[in-house]
Amino acid sequence: MGAVLSTFNSVLNSTATLFSLGIYKRHIKLEANEKELVWVGKLTSIVLAICAIMAAPLVAGAPDGLYQLLQQLNGIFFIPIASVIIAGLFLPRISALGAKAGLFVGLAFYILTVFILEVNIHFVHIWGIEFLLNMAVMFTVSYFSPNSNTFKPSDISPIELKPWKYAKLLGLILVVLTVLIYIWLGN
Image 1 (tube, rainbow, N blue to C red):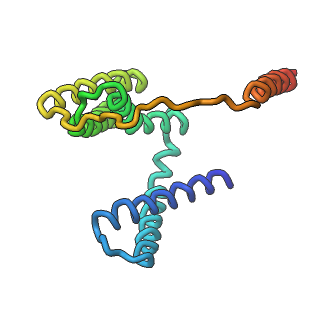
Image 2: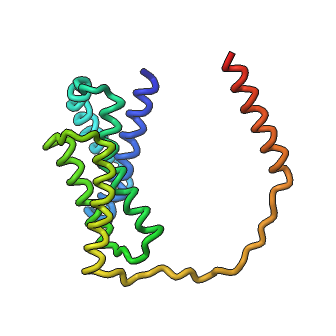
């Protein structure tokens, strides 16, 4: 019970902080003072708590269990974000507009196929299809709206790296401790 309440409280506090500082102060009211931001954070927490309480009975009725439901819900944001990160790291031709389009198309596709149309495919397979769709959307949008802001590293001089003098010894100790714990718990 303590772990559940602690996690719930952490999510409420994090979300309230993100909303009050990241959205409210940046986009809604730029000159908001500290007292007003605290009030907005409390109001955000109250609204989220009420939404969570209203959603709890729906979660309790999850046909495949809570863990499976959480995995399905992770697919809403996990695959679109992962595809954008992978494209950003390895494909410099992807534009910001392409990445945003990939995020929104992936989000809509997953919600539509898993929760609205309830396509008879396991959600992990839908993740793969969603990833390919996101990449196709990012390439297509980037073709018509190319990336004009390519990253060029400015300081690429070599860095002198010296290994830590205790690295090998402590690495060996960690390996031995791991093996000993494994043997101890295996009996």
